[in-house]
Image (cartoon, rainbow, N blue to C red):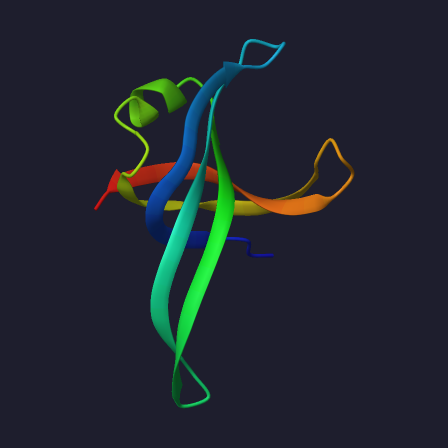
Length: 100
C-alpha cells in the first residue's frame, strides 16, 4: 500500500520543538499550500492547511533553519490523529524538508 505525500507551501504556525516522554525530538508546524491545478480539463484554485510533524534524531538538524514564513517542500506520509477536543485531522509525518 502506498501513502506518500509531497506538498509545498509556507509555514504559517510554529515551528514548535518538543521532546516526547521517551526522549524522541519532534518539530511541529502548519504549512499552507495555494496553487492552481487542472481537474476535469478546467483550472481550479486549490488551498489547504496541513499540520506537519518531523520526528527523530535527525529532526533537529533538518528543522533548525525553519521559521514562520519559510517556503518549503515537505514529503512524508499521512496519518489521522484525534485532537484533544475530540475532532480529527490528518497530519503529515515528514521525512524530508527542503527550502524552495
